[in-house]
Image (cartoon, rainbow, N blue to C red; front, side, top):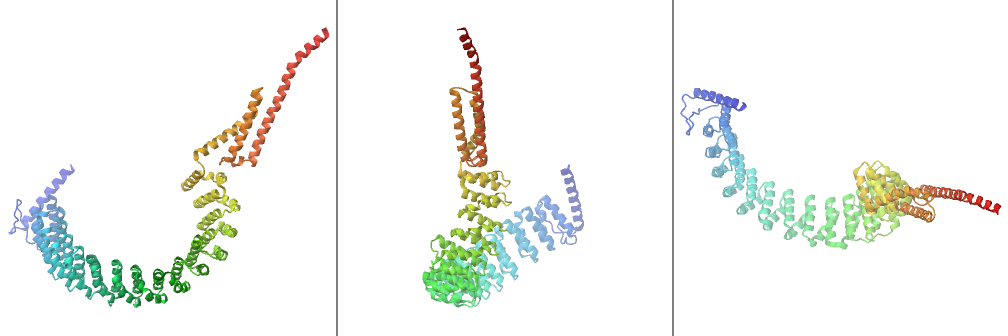
Length: 612
């Protein structure tokens, strides 16, 4: 039904449109050729809405021959709308009619024509687009180059090259970029001339393009710009040389070490490091006193690489530099150079006013300890201890870790005090430290943290207890297997699996429970047997008790029944009492049985005695 109604509405609209068109074009002489006969008015601008609706109607009918004449309408918006409709319909057969619109007097029409031709990938439009490079409007020339690039029109390269000399810098820049995308090596001579362009942006972009097109062959041109008057150009030249790994450029780069621009001096040092220009070391040494901290840091790194241990006397004074970044660079370099007196120098930095310096100092001391290069260990420990009370949590954490690596057991009381620290990271570090230092007296404190609200603390405590107690800690951490946080449950399961096979553990626990039930029953079993069976039942009881005691010593889930524990003693005494009651009842039963068995015989003996 909807289809039928839509068809009727379309037919009515077409009839109305054609009627109105006939009314307005009685004197029309502009008839299109083709199967469909119609009349296009000279000017339909008097009714913009009408024309747009008409084009929409023709588009729905896909009546391309009826749309094409609108490309010549006197109104620009009509021509633009017609091109838009043809683009939407994908009407490539209309390309010859659209191409002339590239030279339309209206810029919106020209842009629409360009976009649709690019959409159609209309190679036949290339000559007309190339012609646009001669337009006075710089935006048109730039747009033309963009279109030629989209159409992959390499044949247009000869026409684009002259644009490198355009008066407009934006056009020159567009030409450079277009030729770069085309990888137009034939344009290299013309592009090279732009290294002397008045615009610094052009010179910078030219370097990048020549580097792309020529590689190391572009070095002469780039080297010439190291003396450019513009700082940004010189900086770009240095970066370009870094990419090209230009060893030949070293003499020119050394000159930049005295440049007034800070970035240039810093970049020059980096480039010299990259090309391993050891001959530049004497020129770099004075830069250790440069006014800029970045330059001083770069100079330290360069001298470390170029001079090795010989640079230590020059670098050491910078441990007192006013900038933290320089002091850190000096520490790192001296550590890598294995400076023998570094320990005493780093100890001084533990009191530095910068957090990063203090942190790095402790990290260096840790590495020295691991490499067996640490001297005055006791002095180091006493210097690190005050940092446990530092206001910064990262400093406290690093201090704990450092004392742990130093195996500073004398510091354990102060480390234990941080179990109450408000920061989780600090408490985690302390828990791990107590385990590594084997501080068993901290076990009661750690047990308390098993129920801590933070899952990370519970996991850390679990690991610490297992490290301190081994299997004895299993009964304490077993509740974590039912923790509400899946990460805690998983971590506990994985750690327990490392200590004991889960299947063996389950078997032990079930057997232990069975023994707990069987032992009391076996204690009463002798009551029901006599002779050999009586002694066998006692033997079974003894064996069951010994089995119970063994399982109690290895089960991880019932430590309260281990030998020496209160519950274990109560249970075993209970078994003994039960066995004692059994023996007592057995004796009484035995006596009663004997009494009842002896009574008739005694009477008969007495009677026989009387008769005799």
